[in-house]
Length: 138
Picture 1 (tube, one colour):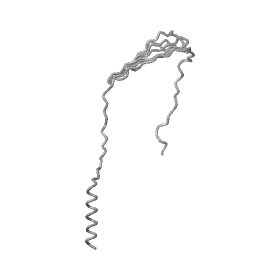
Picture 2 (picture 1 turned 120 degrees about the horizontal axis):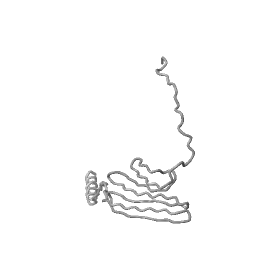
Picture 3 (picture 1 turned 135 degrees about the horizontal axis):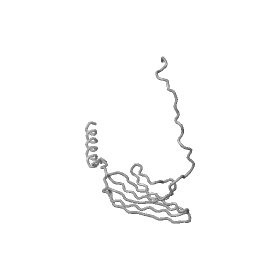
């Protein structure tokens, strides 16, 4: 009986050693793609006006422009650069209410009429309210 058990164990050992079990370890390596240059653009013109966009990039910086002209002749053209120094835009427009100014990093060039663009009631009187100091015993 013991010899039969030893024979069975030996047979199982021989059969199992014939089939090598392969184990695979999956390790995902981060993929870093090199910056790729690109260029695209489009232009659309219909009864409502015209709009366009163009952009060029080299993987480190982007330059482009976009704009529109509506059926009333109002137009806006934005030229921009985005690089290590940040995003910088220059806006050219004839839209009402866009006086020449330079807020933040945007340069606006406007040929809109200077003057009163709508109702302005003047400066409001300041609201002053008494504020109690302390917690009132709490």
